[in-house]
Image 1 (cartoon, rainbow, N blue to C red):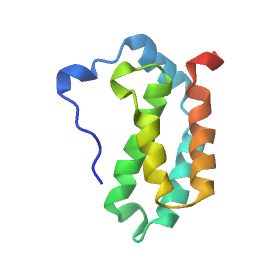
Image 2: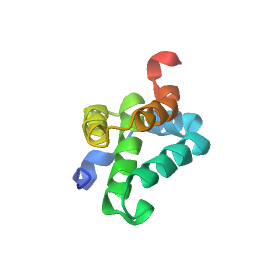
Image 3: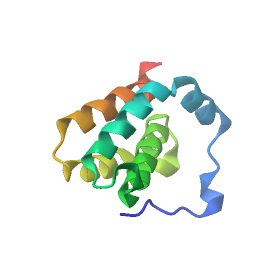
Length: 105
């Protein structure tokens, strides 16, 4: 699995969205998801899909922060997580992502 590739000029995320992302980022929930994901992959964090899925989690956080370039990221993350049939991954992803919802502000 590969992360989506964006042309460099499309990654100009407005400062307000970057500020929102950084204000709502929680390293504890991020690491909990990462550790559960690693436990689901042969080779753990060394598995190539680990980095790609973690990038999708970050992309989804930006999508929920209203960064237009990341539209559809939550669908892509959900589709990937479905292949693992592990409800804990969904729960941990949502726990990490919930604070990024702009509607919650």
